[in-house]
Image (cartoon, rainbow, N blue to C red; front, side, top):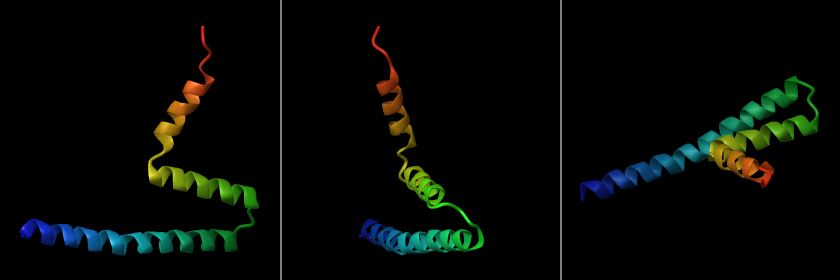
Length: 73
């Protein structure tokens, strides 16, 4: 019984944290885009890097790149 209560608490914490994190990133991006004149390509690149970093895809993408670039001997 106690474990299900803890699980529910973690679920609610996660469901609350996700929109807060998304909103915080939106505010940060809005602030920088309105105070700095950046090209759209730079902004899209930064957003892509943030998404890749947050999802933890950096390592697998790097491994796939190394695998692709490796020449057969």
